[in-house]
Amino acid sequence: MIIFDYMEKYDYEQLVFCHDETSGLKAIICIHDTTLGPALGGTRMWTYDSEADAIEDALRLGRGMTYKNAAAGLNLGGGKTVVIGDPKKDKSEELFRSLGRFIQGLNGRYITAEDVGTTVEDMDIIHEETRFVTGVSPAFGSSGNPSPVTAYGVYRGMKAAAKVAFGDDSLKNRVIAIQGVGHVAYSLCKHLHDEGAKIIVTDINKENVDCAVQEFGAEAVHPEEIYDVECDIFSPCALGAIINDETINRLKCKVVAGSANNQLKEERHGDLLEEKGIVYAPDYVINAGGVINVADELLGYNRERAMKKVEGIYGNILKVFEIAKRDGIPSYLAADRMAEERIEKIRKTRSNFLQNERSLINFNLK
Ligand SMILES: NC(=O)c1ccc[n+]([C@@H]2O[C@H](COP(=O)([O-])OP(=O)(O)OC[C@H]3O[C@@H](n4cnc5c(N)ncnc54)[C@H](O)[C@@H]3O)[C@@H](O)[C@H]2O)c1
Ligand SMILES: CC(C)C[C@H](N)C(=O)O
Image 1: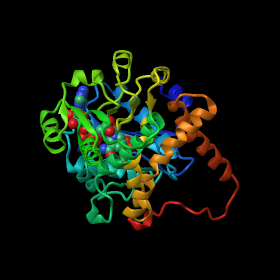
Image 2 (image 1 turned 180 degrees about the vertical axis):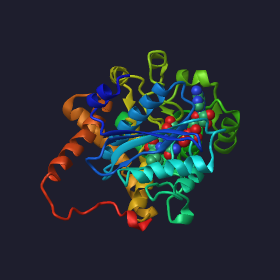
Image 3 (image 1 turned 90 degrees about the horizontal axis):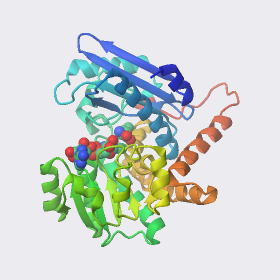
Image 4 (image 1 turned 135 degrees about the horizontal axis):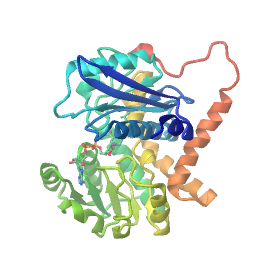
């Protein structure tokens, strides 16, 4: 990959390579766009096959956060960190403190939180070195693990998508097939079970499946069978790129609505879902509950205020489909348009000179 060509193509601001010999830290911090505010996005720890893969992931995920934060109505730009390493073997206090110092060095242009491979405990260590971290333990006045809140947002967005597809947002007796029943989907199952939905789950981790079967009366299927099950809603809550040429013609659902990031392998798969008459709830709109919740820490965490905003994911999904109808485009493009329109409007609104610009973020509270 020619890095500057890629950065120019998608208008990236900054890419930071972090190395620390003592801790073995090798990390990449991507800041995509800070028009709306400092870039907020999680830290992913993963065993990448190559450095090129890690750079590409940081770039792709950082840009995704710009769209997610903008569409969620947050005063935040988008960024992400990737740490090259095995989260099961390579974590240490010195590694996360070292990362915290690099983040502190960016002086608030980038704020981190949890992502795949990192936990509240890791954020607590980063917090030793920088205040530009969220998703820290409630003991610090912070919001803690974002997953249950992400799940609540997905539940709200799923109801909105059901309203678009079926004209009724009730999930009672709806058959919902969930791929991956980890942190987010476990909490999602609770909401669905409480509303009387029929749940089908799969996971490569048998313990997670057993738990969903016992606690929520879910039916279990083999991971490869999940694409073929007859259902109302298919909910991808494991991996990205699962809507692809191999899976798309197998889907027997009316709605795709789940927490996984980057569900469409390529944009054209969003067009194909539209052609098949499947209502697709764009991933970064429906899964924004976690970032909405951690972002509230920057104002002085107030759970009630944060949850009210997460409830709003219902309305955000409906708005996406209004734009899709207005402009005659598929929902994934409508979501992009919604985010881009907001960024452009705020860019213009804030372009005049102000002697004392008001900061929308209060870092001193942490
Ligand atoms: N945690 C959050 O707050 C949050 C916020 C936004 C987006 N997301 C996204 O939602 C998804 C789930 O996040 P999570 O925090 O629950 O992660 P998790 O790791 O706790 O859960 C993922 C689950 O998927 C399972 N899985 C992996 N590969 C699979 C496969 N091929 N088939 C079936 N199951 C498989 C794993 O065993 C695991 O149980 C991820 O894509 C993540 O990026 C999470
Ligand atoms: C800030 C984090 C809670 C973000 C989360 N990992 C996401 O992808 O939305």
